[in-house]
Image (cartoon, rainbow, N blue to C red):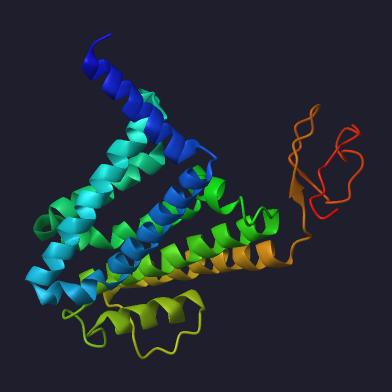
Length: 262
């Protein structure tokens, strides 16, 4: 085995230990990546307002692109099987986000889709393998996923309305107006002071109402539904059970659910 191959294997092993390991160093590394990811998502949300700052915006934009490029390359090496890694939908979302960062002048009108990274982060195994070590609670995970889906929907729609209608339609003069329209439509408040013109505007408004209400109801259900723990039944595979369950309610198999509170 050549020196280059040995170096490559050591690099892959090191990255695999950082991205998938359980050592204190690996956990701290993943926490740092998550904090940087959250900062990047905040930049994505504020990007429509920052674009007017010219050079500063582009410097931050390309800096974020450089980080995402390194992170994607490191994740690919840590995964091992490049073909199966590339087939993951989350990877394609991240690649699209990277494209909007590398070509902001051409793809900025699609930049509102960058916020989808919030959804991919909160729904990723990487996130819960790290956060779950501290908040290993099924309800916390369920509520967090539902809240992330709702927030992603709100800011994606806001970005779309901003990029499509600001300056072209009276009543939508800035990002706050676009956010205001999204929230009032989502909650079906419908004050009527900010509306979208034409047939497409009406269709978008209806889509926001239906999609937003569905996600909001999902969030409420995740908060109010009875608490259950994830513990797959060895026989029937039922994953969710009451915390004090002794037998699987589907097949009757005796369970041995760990109780960390004892």
